[in-house]
Amino acid sequence: MDRSLPPETVEKIRQIIESHRPLIVDYHKLRTRRSGSEMHVDFHLVVCRQYLLQDAHRVADHLEKEVAQVLGNAHVVTHIDPCDIECRGPDHCERILGEIRKLDDPERTQPDRENGEKV
Image 1: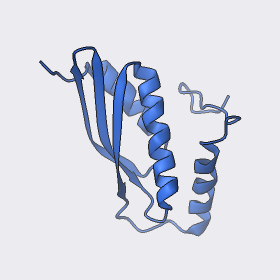
Image 2: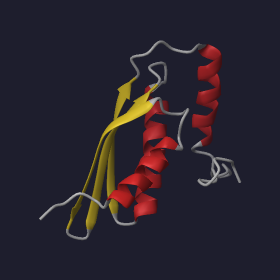
Image 3: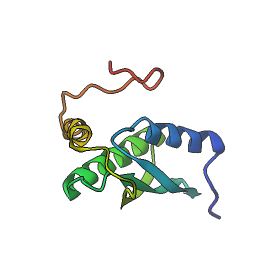
Image 4: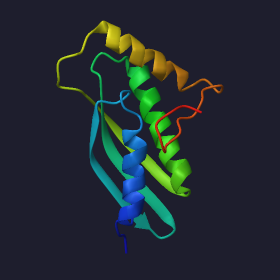
């Protein structure tokens, strides 16, 4: 029988997602379950409506991989939603887009989850 993942695991997932602000605007509809030995996670990811589709998917793919890596044997699916708030301007978006493009860079430094700094 399927059941939700433990609260501490769900909190770990929330922390991973939250650590990706400002690349994401928000998230919602986080659902988790365990089916046998597999874990399943899905959530809606809200991104800036001015992102190119490939940039939105780059962020979603990165988050899916990071959650799956932390959890181990997990199947992670995201659904991308555009934000419904007014854009904060092209200068802000350009900085965010630069960070998104670093996600594919193997030389990219990983953020330190404890204090939010890059190491």
